[in-house]
Length: 130
Image 1 (spheres, rainbow, N blue to C red):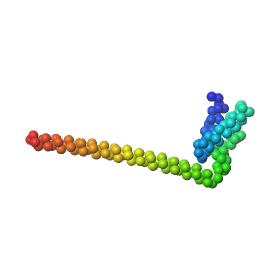
Image 2: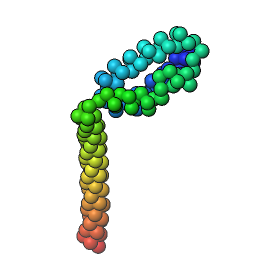
Image 3: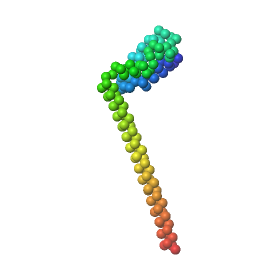
Image 4: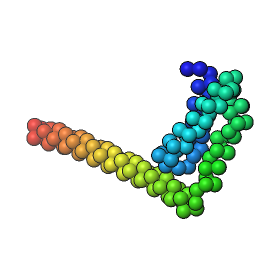
């Protein structure tokens, strides 16, 4: 992998992280940007990360430009979907933690009852024998 390819991948990775949209739209944007960057790098074989930023803008600028093209409704839907996803992840994680705590609690209670039963058995055995 050439130095330019690594720089292009890093640049695209930064852009991908900044885009607040669905995966399908991100992929489309990144494919177009990758093609543009590849063409630029063929024309400028000595280009580095600074040159990419000069030619295309910072990853933040690209994300802002994309956000500017979204309607308020589309942006709100994207934010709602992300919020719903995170809420679902938190609820499922919380339920898993609660289930683990309950199972652990039942195991502790069962162990304590077993210890108590063994203790009572020992005392009864001593009384009967004694």
